[in-house]
Figure 1 (cartoon, rainbow, N blue to C red):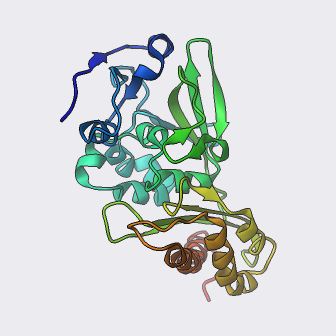
Figure 2: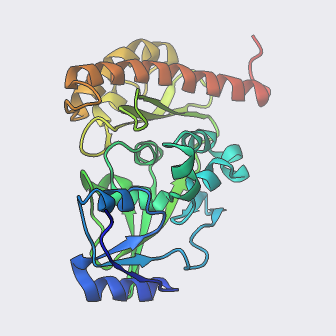
Figure 3: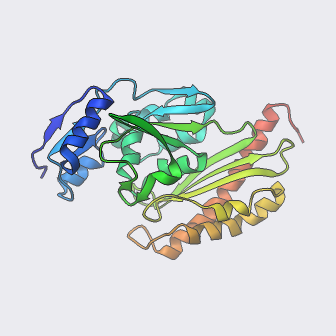
Length: 299
């Protein structure tokens, strides 16, 4: 049963921040509400006020600016899945959004709400970690940019201050010679394991110039696994491919997986290893296909 609450409807970020500062922990931002209202209906949490930010203009734009893709926090998952810009410049992200939760969630749920709620079994944060995203948080007195590595503090907890509003996400456009993959595994609606991988290749395409590995949905918060990345960087594609299994093993152990109804710790760690090997293969194939399209080797 959903208890009574007051709905505030500010029309600017400044008004929103002032409301959050005034009412403190008794207020919470409401955007899509797919996670928030469910938790309130179950009686797990209650707020006296919900601050509806859906009337604030421009916060649902998707555009390219200064070498980065800017995603407004009020962009729904469905809008992002269908974005022509994302499909052309960052297809792995559009595909990930196309498979978030279910159609109801994708229709009304927003990327900003998803990240701010910090539900452990969610897809976007993991891929954004692999992509090196930066989040923009604003309040009445100014705004700041937060590297996504610092954004998630734990399950349902972020570094946002009480009066801050997440307004956008900046995603660097991946290098031309790269492959980006997001894979997930789960037998329920929420993913049990998620893995994001970005591989950047050198100019001749024969070695790995950079690698970013992120694992999510297995523990309290998504994590970037630099120890796994170190096994792939600077190696030839062949050697890195052979090291992908070991990198996956390291990523599984470092992911802080916990046993729950989605599976045991050991099982999740094994799935991480499997997904990293598959992601490496797919990212390599992406790069090889793009190379042929640029007039590269035709075999």
